[in-house]
Length: 382
Image 1 (cartoon, one colour):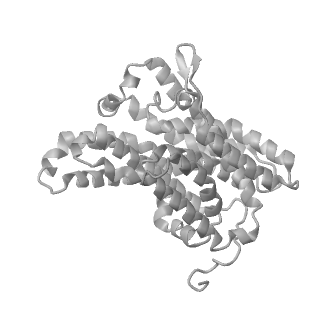
Image 2 (cartoon, rainbow, N blue to C red):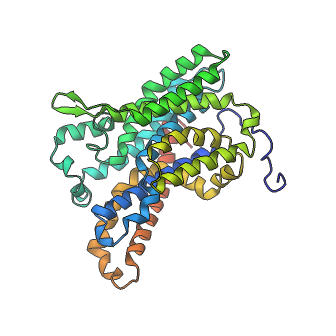
Image 3 (cartoon, helix red, strand yellow):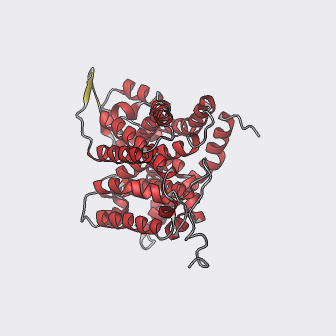
């Protein structure tokens, strides 16, 4: 077995702050699921209805809301892993520059097209709640990157970007507080157990948290979006503290793969409708914790270059796909319909074209915009 899968029986000793490739892959899978879940929704009752796509095809990806909460948990875990693992003080200036470089450039680049007349025609037609709302408030909250905090997805022009507002809030306010708490406890006995309890409690509250809107003048504050983001981020942070203290025997094959197979079983049951999608949230801590080992057969699959490629471009896929769905549907309807009329299975062809456009544009965005902007903001001028 060890000859076929080197290192499966040995404890994993990852250096603090090193890349967790399995988590990179999970981000890519989650982003793709959000994208294809939105395609399925539009195939059922929106701009893609005339493509003749069967919404049932997309049931595998109909867990987009849970996927967004997985993003929050992964973010909390990774920031703990990168910044809290050593005794060195955190350089908060470089931390802030890194977070700004990670979030802001692409957020604003993908916001700009939603302010153009073409986007009104191609996209906003299926979001009448925005068109009939207070345009000034909608515009200001989106430009201030707080629309998701105040309204959730409903008043966010690029609707998936609601979570970016919440995540940036966690970067600025939640992470520093969690760092202070972690350092206050230090390496005291029982910290790992306390972190595990807090991670499970945060996960439970994230899965069950319900709160009515809070009135802010004439506008209801949809506070549940911010609350779930904070809870997910905190759960991921505490999970990383647990991971640092995991006994080596748990980080070996086959324990890692047994846990991840259990997570896959939960996923299959939710896709078959046997249990609620809510149970995915209860499975996420095990998914994040054991995949972080980056060792075993399932993490070995996640470390495949295809999943790594997708994970690296996950942020671009996440922010570009709604806009590109509208543009591709509009172009096919106005320009390409004549050329596709006589092609067998034209709905599948159109879907394949949409996926290819989203992935290609995301790759270009990642290589020629995201990376240069991150490097420039962080001061890595080449």
